[in-house]
Structure formats: C-alpha cells, structure tokens
Length: 130
Image (cartoon, rainbow, N blue to C red):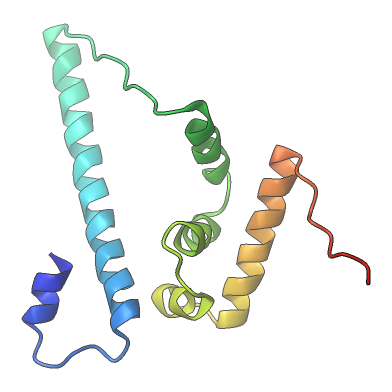
C-alpha cells in the first residue's frame, strides 16, 4: 500500500526512508484501530449469542513479558524503542517521524532502556577499563 502511494506521488519525498516509516506507521495504527473496533463488536456479539471466545494462543512467554513491560512505558518511549529495535530506525529517522528533537529522542530511548533494565533486573553493561 505504501509503495502504491509512492508510485502515485508527483514528487518523491525528501526523505524516502522517513516517509516510508511515517506512512507504514500510520497505516498500522489505522489497521490496529479497525481491528480493535471489530474485535470489540465480535466480543459483544458473542456475549449476546451466548458464545464463548477461545483464548488466543501466545507464541511465547518471553514475548508476553516484553509486551507487558513495554506497555508500562509512556507511549512516546514505547514507540521510540519499537522503532529503534524492531524497525532498526536511526535516531534521526525517529526524530523526524515523531516530531521530537534528536536529543529528546535519544534521552527518551535511554530512559526507556533504563526502565526496562530495572524492571527485568538486568545490570547496565560496563565498558572495559583500559
């Protein structure tokens, strides 16, 4: 969908990678909203008809733990961590996507990692002493 949009543009975006992140992020958020609304309607319809919803299978306990911990972060920090780790976005790309200054993106990323380390009781790696 993003590439179809790109092909239809008169002028290419100034920062294609940033544009792609923003476009796919917005599409993902729209899909998530749609899925949540549809799930809610289905749950309500199931309760009305007396049907019971089967529990969704989880892929692993680790994934559930990570998701539960990420949810404790503020939304902006959660987005920054997700973009940096899973999307492998640069801090510059994240700053452009979120509209935050580059220094704020880095500070929030560091704060989020500190929070996660404390939650999981993982010590901060120390640089070797020369």
